[in-house]
Length: 628
Image (cartoon, rainbow, N blue to C red):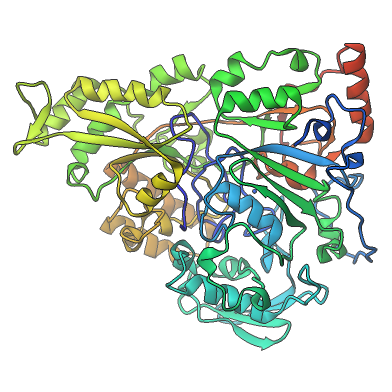
């Protein structure tokens, strides 16, 4: 599967920036954390490990033996400005990973959980600076761009090695391209961008040349995002069967343990070659990362209270508003904090499958938008913690609101009028019919997520005569059906990137592909024209103007019933960690902790003493804002 729609259906999640196919490619949000963009394309426990009731520091636990680092000589160069020079290595960090993925192979099951894992195991040629829109070498130590801007020659760092000691080579980068482009592999999402390039040329063992066959403003970033895959380990292997076993990696972590449907544990690699790079100093500090998997959000909160998870980014307003005043938080042993930064924002909405005849009439789609009572849901279910969307690219506008687009209001009478204009009449049984057919739709949903919002919507659909129902199935079945376009309606939350590319989501070329990101099946000549226009526009400001035109057209044709978005990241975490002053990175979400936080023995000792004595710790700021 190329793109997983297992997002947080039925809950008011916010969208997040993507650990992407390449910069500008969006990712459906399935888990609570953000993407692994600090590694690619911008390029993501046990009680004693949590440290709340244990007399031992995490690194002293027998379950997690401390990682021993090999000695390295750090090169001269720039450090990551988000990273803290005093960050210490060691300890265990446990967080919530959301629903357990079908595969940890992010190229097969493209979701935020698998993308986080993949971004810590494997590396691209070049990433994006944490605070500037500039390239930073990862596997590549240098690169050259041909005069015509079509060919990109990357020289691999001489220290770049796989975990088995073999060097990372140009053939490994070529192998990535071959693997993604192989039609037998379930990697169609990645072929959208890679199809613009010829097969990479192996210049020598450490040099690879990647040539674009057609112009595109994103070509450098797409080439920079090519990943090295271990050809010597995977050549001749069925890539579609590589799911939970990655014995050869190049990144800062390796897979330590997988407990199916329960948890994934990564272990920091003490011999990671990337420690020679000054940009990695003060990063990837935890010896172990434990991703706990459950879809019961109330259960996660109880896990946090007991110390079974160290942090809980909260995306359910009811939990944040009503369930976070527990004793551990009152005593500041657990920090409750809203973090505002420059994280790109996308949209979430209910995708209307326009491949279905019933949704091919825009009047019907508009009627469905007028039947969603967002105002009521925001007030009664979400404590007015969200802003309502009127844009598919909200961060293009001040205050995330398109000033010229209408905010669709709940209006059942308007919906009835639109449906009548479209030929739907109420029959004797109270249901809408047209040409002898009853208006019947199903909202496809997967097991384990709450249904409060969808149940409200369901009643309003029924009130105007639509025979609507919710079908709840297993996540695996859900994924398969969405990949094959076998649905009427689904709830999907999308991520954003600093560099936005609309092609994979809105191009007619992607509408009928298996496992496409174009869930509604949009085929629109004007959008196609604008997509082609922006491909060769090198000025970011003018590209954004084209995106505003695409946004206006999307608002007009309404492939989604737009929902809402949040302006901040809401966090609960045990007060035993060191972290940057901004808590999260400039453009990143809660997964910033994976790279930039560290276990602080002094803070953990103070926490334990406070717990033992029953006293409060000093209060932490309720809000943290990234400086303008």
